[in-house]
Image (tube, rainbow, N blue to C red; front, side, top):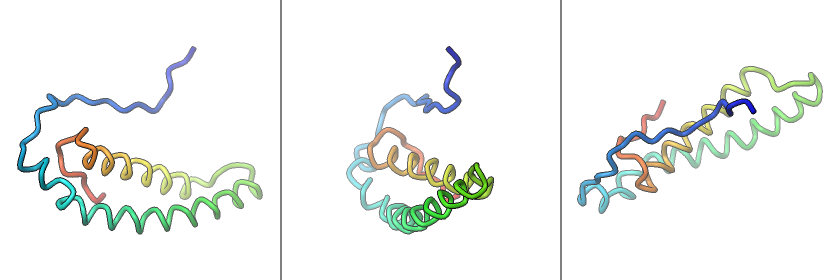
Length: 92
């Protein structure tokens, strides 16, 4: 069986500073607001992509790229808030 092309690799030592764990939700507020706005946009883009896929027979590359970028960003923010990742998630 072929390997799945999408993986999450965690190569962290799992040590966390108590101060950053205590302030993690406060530090994540800008990312949570950006993720909320991105989620609303991704919802409507997914609907448009569904109609485009019905018409064309496949998802257009631009919509696929944007939705994959949304999943990547949401995974980084969830990992940061859920203490699975220490680095501050980039907005890009």
